[in-house]
Amino acid sequence: MTTETLMPYDEALGRFEPVLGMEVHVELGTASKMFCGCRTEFGGAPNTQVCPVCLALPGALPVANEKAIESTIRIGLALNCSIASWCRFARKNYFYPDMPKNYQISQYDEPLCTDGYLDVEVDGRIVRVEIERVHLEEDTGKSTHVGGATGRIQGADYSIVDYNRAGIPLVEIVTKPIEGTDRLAPEIARAYVAELRELMRALGVSDVRMEEGSLRCDVNVSLMPRGTSTWGTRTETKNVNSLRSVERAVRHEIERQGAILADGGRIIQETRHFHEDTGATTSGRSKEEAQDYRYFPEPDLVPIAPDAEWVESLRGGLPELPRVRRARLQEEWGASDLDMRSMHNADAIDLVEATVAAGAAPADARKWWMGELARRANEAGSALVELAITPVQVARVCAMVAEGAVNDKLARQVLEGVLAGEGDPDEVVERRGLRVVSDEGELSAIIDQVIADNAAAADKVRGGKVAAVGALVGGVMKASRGKADAGRARELILAKLGVSE
Image (cartoon, rainbow, N blue to C red):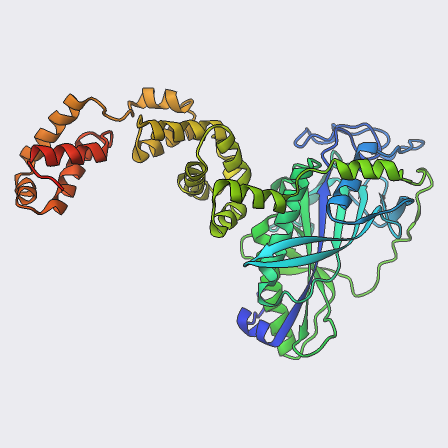
């Protein structure tokens, strides 16, 4: 991978204005593929979820998946799109080594949904991202290039193809050019994809697991000199598969393109690859010449003509949309704007809501998910939702703390045990002996010993330096291995030393 000169981000934004375009592909969570009855489960043995239709064997004919069409219409409605009263599929002809037909059934000039928008919030600012189209197509298979250093076809010894994914329903959501993002361009790109992902989850149309490829993003970036209105040449960074990477890809392209333009060079219209390890993009395939995909209407499928009453019934069945839900939860939980942004960015709102539903106070649920559990997720390099703990278990830990059965220090050990697979919170407490020392006699004996071992500190407290009691409380907590109630220990120490506050 060659190293390209980059312009400092602030300098690039001082000289150029970015224009973004986002193309997001969402695999729909249907039970069967788009044009056949094959299963769609992720992770099946290679080439076991295939049939004559998705393998394009002679004489096999496609039949459109009604559920996929319904899901696409629901997506379009949630994105404030107009729904076509008549549209059809087309054949997109291209060299597809991972598509058995060697063409893709897609939609071209007659998409199912058009002219919508999605509002996103970034840094306290509402940005309206306009949607050009939402259309339905089929996914390709998966190629694996074996040998070589990059995992790409260049330099590989050979390639193998898994056709399980070929034919899975795929929705493509294409924005109109996004202008006026200025210095927030990377954050707006990330926020848009995050909001879109949350919307797909709310609709229940996809699991949108970016790490598994069920949501993939192509990021288009161009720069135009400040004070002009002519868009620059765009690049398209393909298949970016995490929110962080979307943000990094935009930032890198701004810095890379800025350096080229400032040096008198020109931007080549091309696809680019994003590298997770470096945050850089590298050249892929030139798109300076328009590709002739030889679109023509798919002859084996009838047009789609959604009934207006059906569309309106789908509109009436839409769930509460994410922004509305967040506003409601913020009011119910009494959370600050910063709290909600933090939970949203950490993808923790669903987890906190489920924990509250299981009986925890909102502040307690937020505290543990955004504190100890977020720390552990960061250490493991995983998402919060991937941790081996459930909202019900977190709610039980919250209840234990509220009951006084464990304190915060012990609660962290309980969470550690649950994450380690030692059982539910109550089982971990019993197995590890983590319950708070609540027996006054046992606690009194520990305090007597600590006072005897720390006579100097005890004398300071007797002499009026109440702040010195902290050392004695610390001694009690150490002696009890963190199991004592620190507040009660303080009260008893002061009483034994004849000091009142």
